[in-house]
Length: 204
Image: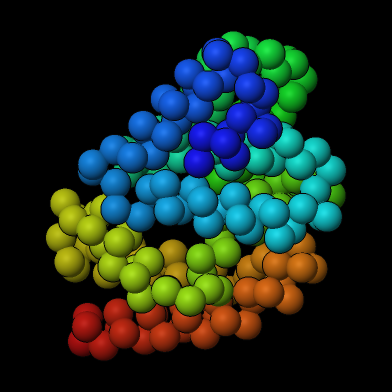
């Protein structure tokens, strides 16, 4: 993984140190879904959508930072992750404008619904982050999410998760880029609909 970081952040000793810190963060023992496997999957998805991006390096840097801080506190995690990017990227020799762009992209991943029309880089990052919904292994993803929220009682988790799924299914297009829709839209809707039905059955 470090090689992928150095390819976008530069191969200076400072960049290598930041990369090592990020890998350590993504490897924290309390994580179940937001792990190095998730990071790798997001980076792979960004590669598949690369032609859709305007600033591909900014998207890749944002992918590395988007859940670098993870305590299971939506909104708070993304804000702290963006602040981490702003604190660490200057050490890698990244310019101020691109750092600002990376931080803005990281903040987008808090809810994915603040993406502005025409934001190609935001669309690529958000689609890559949601690619898991339309891929094989969806059942494993849902189990890992439940483990990350193991402190939440079943009744509250089912209600909250069901609301998230209903909100995602209600949008006319889950993915913002044509390539992502082609790759994952239909399968994602099938997966989420099946999960929502299973949660309703469990609730009943």
